[in-house]
Image 1 (tube, rainbow, N blue to C red):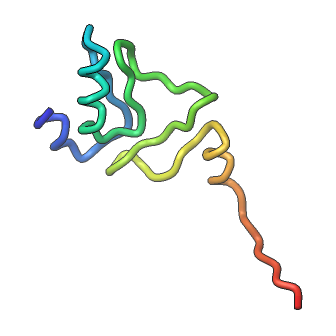
Image 2: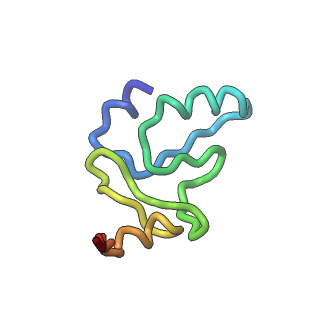
Length: 78
């Protein structure tokens, strides 16, 4: 945990364990855009994907990814 936590990057992480409850305790301490438990990290178009720290900003895929490409206009009418 100390080595992983000291990384400047945080795109994805894999956690391998037979104890799912323990995995849910550990996941709170892992800084990454995606965490896969008992599988390799892979994006899924049904879920937002992106990193933290020096692994980028924002999200792609899902509705949050669409918002990255939108320009919102505010209009006030008196």
